[in-house]
Image 1 (cartoon, rainbow, N blue to C red):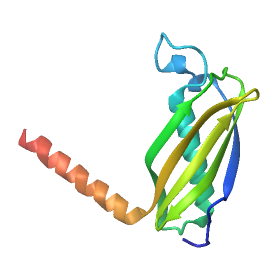
Image 2: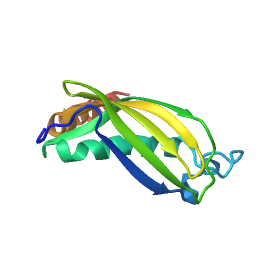
Image 3: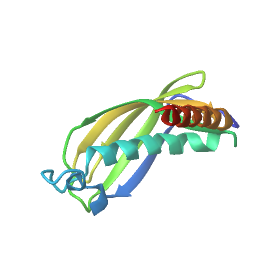
Length: 140
């Protein structure tokens, strides 16, 4: 980590919702409102954006736990604001509190736990896993 980050640091991001973010995109019987999967993605990436300036070039962050309460529907075309704050830090694990709002009300709250990892080591593990899968497939 290049610089020091600390508990209480936060970031806010504004995102305009678009049709491809709608719940109806995922299931035909769902309404044309911001989907939970899209909201979770925005919450997670907002946390990652807060961490990015503090990472060394060989580091990246991954979410290891995500919890969200989707409290209210947001019509497509609305602008949402995501606020992520560092709640605590334990070594390479960073715990975030996250809230999301549309122009009218709070639409979600949750938590995201992220690990700072070494990119090369992570990629090595993926290559090992891919090799194991291809060997397994050949034996079938």
